[in-house]
Length: 181
Image 1 (cartoon, rainbow, N blue to C red):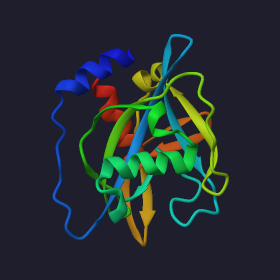
Image 2 (image 1 turned 120 degrees about the vertical axis):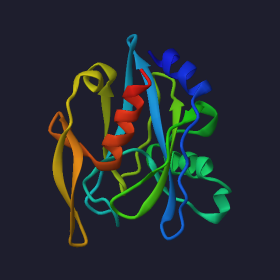
Image 3 (image 1 turned 135 degrees about the vertical axis):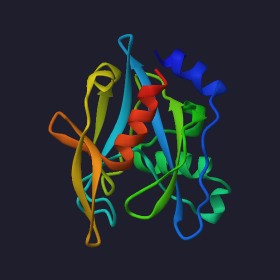
């Protein structure tokens, strides 16, 4: 399955977006194979972080000038949040850019992490890791649910995995990844 995604990303032409007023962010979609089955690694954010408290997300964050590009942002944030070193991961491509409800322009990259991997979560940012099986992702049917940000309410795609709500940009990235399978 992961080899299929690798092949698809080799020829995939991701759509970019023109980002004027929003801030850029880079995220990493970490994939790994455990006992012959593919998984996506997600983070459950703590309730003490500044933004996106308690939400399920990919490792990632806001672009900083020192990063040079959004790919380096995703790699830096992945190391800071879950302890994946750049040399231990293979970036195999990227997905379409997207806007988020919170006003970011997000660029998602897909990377392969070896298994087993000694993840080191940052306790200030990450409550725990979620190993989302591809089998589940292929069968889940997202439903539109309301999400509120600064008084603005929007219906966003959502689904639940082991009690955690996966919604918004994270859900949309997962659905785009699913279409590649």
